[in-house]
Amino acid sequence: MKPLASILKTLPPTKVIDSNIDFSKYILLDLSVTNQELVDIKPESTAAFDVYISNYIKKNNAEVAFGGYIEGRSLYKRSTIFKNDSLPERNIHIGVDLWAKAGTPVLAPIDGKIHSFKNNIGLGDYGPTIILEHEIENEKFYTLYGHLSLESIENLTVGDSFEKGQEIATIGNQEVNGDYPPHLHFQIINNIEDYWGDYPGVCNTNDLNFYIENCPDPNLLLKIT
Image (cartoon, rainbow, N blue to C red; front, side):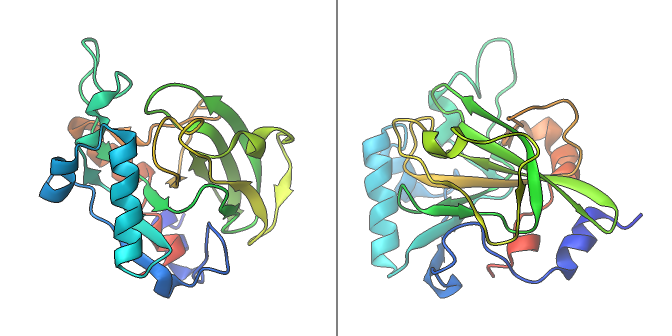
């Protein structure tokens, strides 16, 4: 059986947000622990974080800031979802974030159907989330879309089909998306196990090798750069 990463590499470039935004309007964004400028603005404040993202996009004459795959971040320290007394700290991001305006359309990058959906409520969590199921070359895999608007999951049914490029959702605002500046968390999942409407998007260092294998780089599919 061909590895999922190899299959993704053979597919043409695709988009998961507004098809009218050209890739030339995308700018790479570093949110890692090594970004001193980000440390200085204290990203635990959503308002300050939002200003930082907006100014970064505007300064670079862009419409979308993207990045974050296998990126170690400090911004999760504010939430007990990622760090508490009973669990090791999770701080390595295992999807790609696309930072854009609330209401931006979210698209199916390839043909698929609804596997599950859920509103993952809580500070730092996904908020409204959709998971699609796909099958290519007899290989079944999944894509996750987090931080959506509430409207995105209101009229869904498990099994609903979507074609490549069809709108499946819109990006949510900070009131519903786990208290983040508006963005889409996009993640590829090989084996979803028993997860339903949810799947870890941030991992601990000790589990990184597993998640690199099970959640290949989304840019293998998107091909932004």
